[in-house]
Image (cartoon, rainbow, N blue to C red):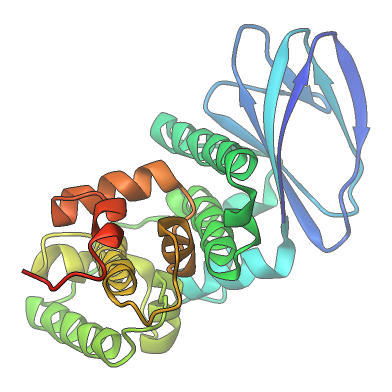
Amino acid sequence: MQIFRELTSHVLRQSCIVNSESWWFGIPVERGEQCKLGSYAVGENTVAMRPGFAPFELLTPDSFEILGLVVNRQDLVLHIQTLNQSSVLPRTMQDELLKIKPVQKMGLQRLVWQILEEAARTPDIVSNPSSNESIRIAVLDALADVCSSHETTGRPPYRQMSHYKIVREVRQHLLENQDETITVVDLCQRFQISRRTLQYAFQDVMGMNPNAYLRTLRLNGVRRCLRDPNSGVSSVQQAAANWGFWHMSQFARDYQGLFGELPSERLKRRSFPIS
């Protein structure tokens, strides 16, 4: 996976091609004149897509910025199929330009900026296997969301009792595997349900989406590490990264919001009895 930001000061015509096993997504940051993918103008709230080993030309105006994602094609295909619980890929993945909602485009841009900023600020976060995997999943989740958003056919007719059963079984699985960093795609694969079904079940029963619930469990995992002098963890950053957190400022806010204290304060009290 490659994540990058490209800034140009002059008008450029670039001949581009990505690895045959990959898929390129270009997310322009509009500041006036639009860029062109071949003969197509990449308009507002549009993401450009090209499969690997398919040459394309990108014409960009002066003072231009574009965010880029290059992902393994098979990784993305399997991720989308698992989340949707369908072997059929969204029709939109056959296009060169993908029209998306403004909030989706802003979310993609924010995710790329955050990853690049955090990688520059704390390189150890990116090299940690757990936080590195969280970044990979976050990117695949975001791309799966924008690729699948036009395939929605409305809320499926699941009964509330089915939702209780789904949540009960998922919670039992999570309780039995408290020391593992489990993702939404893991749950979809294990229980053979789509992301939408899982989302509806948790919203109905828990009043929160499954990602928020999983994040709370991971925050509790960090807290256990910070409290336990035998955990082998010597810093907040290490504890957070081990549980898949890579955006440290957001992690600190989430931790404080849940537990009413900063993670560094919890670590300082490690050797003292819990009141």
